[in-house]
Length: 419
Ligand SMILES: [Zn+2]
View 1 (spheres, rainbow, N blue to C red):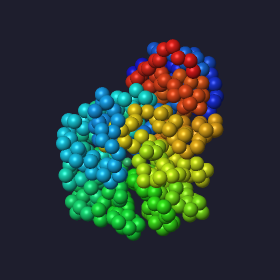
View 2: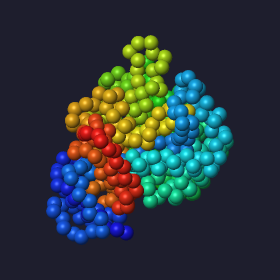
View 3: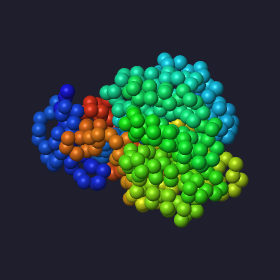
View 4: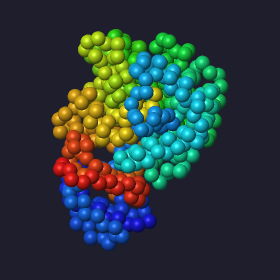
């Protein structure tokens, strides 16, 4: 494997003139004025180097199902439930080859945008069985030199309502699936908070038996009012403490936290923090609040308060060009800008935080090993055409070079533009 010397880089904390020496897929030296000989030496001339973007919540098996030549919602928007039903209808016609082809294209697009790790939600239910799992396992193998892929079981048609699900999920973990997924809102047997808690207890049990982490779709709606005990994430956090699963649980969406009174939300956030539950915000601000006639809600979780309380918060694309969201480019720089608007994050420090959220925080949520830009870390990194993290986000700059395991996997240039 070729040795690479990257010279004159700016790091995420603003420190300048750093050189990174990469050998055997890892960062072996870091400092100023390195003179080691290398097969490839690149003078970055003061550009920003970051560890690879980490896509922490992505429905990869259904991504890119819409026509590529005319992106956009093919029919008018319907309720989230109806959207889901529409997805179910179309999904019946997927073949394994079709899933592999779209997921592979998705990984190539993500890689082009500097993504070096993805946690992919993957449908498992009685209709499709383990077809989607088989497809994503093949894709994980095929693209292992481009992206680290974690696969999460996503029980699209429920868990409590299907006796065969437990067996199927346990089988999935034997096949090499990484993470147990949960989505109580999709289970027809779940209609009360108590039902959701029961559902998540079953999910915990399966996760712990398999020795895998848990990834929960939590509190997806935005009711006009919600109490502390009604929040799904409260129960999930409590159980993380009880079961010794701190640091091993991720809660996606958590939209209803925004519906809670501020004092209730604060209590919940303190508990989430204590439990070490990571929160993934999906800045898809078009899905909820459609019925609002004024003061239209967007369904974002309380990103800033969670961060202030020390919660590990990240954000992700969730759905890309599918029945649920017709937008998206597997580009976390783009999603970060959307979240900056949505969550009112505009100071330099907050823009810098957004860049950490989709890299360092997301890697922590996925518990990626040897992630970062220290000596010994895996050389998964991106050179951005910017001099600082906030300049990268605001300028939506090009990802000039993308490295995975120390190998160049994408190179992009734009011409005649001023940053
Ligand atoms: Zn999701």
